[in-house]
Length: 239
Image (cartoon, rainbow, N blue to C red; front, top):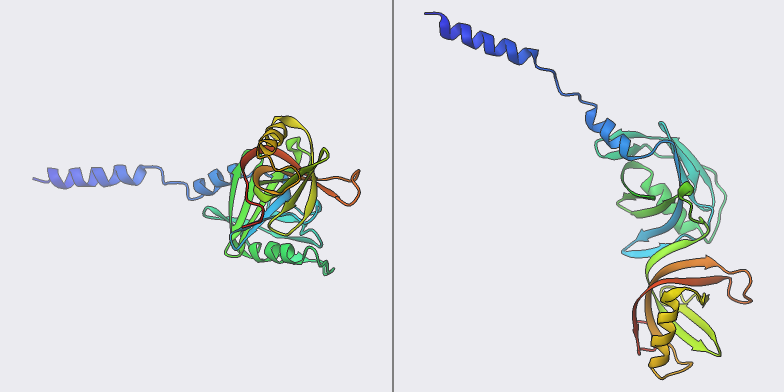
C-alpha cells in the first residue's frame, strides 16, 4: 500500500546525491583559452569598419593572473580583470597622461574597450579584444615573428614600377612606401604589371602583406612586403 510512496522517496534521495554542476567550470574552461601570463603586441585596430595599422611598435597588452597592463602606443596603463561568462570584465584602467598626436585615436580605442565587458578570442598566436567602439588585433610577443612588422590583410593602393624601383601609395591614407623586391609573390606582381603594357603608370593593387620599417631608403621610412597578390587592375585611381 505504501510502495509507491517509498519509490518516490527513493528517487528523490538518489537525485539529491547526484554531484552538483561546478559553477566555475565554464570560467575555468574560458580561462584556459587565454594564456596567462602572456604578452601581446598590437598589430592593427578596427574602427568604423576600417582596419588601421598600429601607429608604432610600442603598443602592447600584458595579461597576468587578475592583472592587465601595457601601453597604448603613447601612455602606460594598468588595471584588474576577471572572467565574466565568455568575456573579460575590466572595470577601467589607470593610465599616464602624456599626449601623443599620432596615437590619440588608437589610445582612445584602447581605453574605451578596456572599460567593462571585453570580448576576446585567441587563435594561434593572435589575440583580439573587442567592444562597442571597435577591435584591437594583437600578435603574441614570443611567437618568433618580429614585432616591428605590422601584418595587414587587404591592403589597397596604387602600384608603380619604373627603372627597377617599385613604389606603392596606400589608398587609405596616401602613405607612399617602397616595395620590397623579394619572394615569389613580388615576382608574380612584377610579371603581371609588365603584362599590362603601361610602364611607369599606376595600377590599382590589392595585396596581403606587411608594412615594415625601411630605414635604408631615403624618403620612404616604410616598405611593403607582399605575401599574396589578391588583384591588380588597370584602374589608375583609388576607389
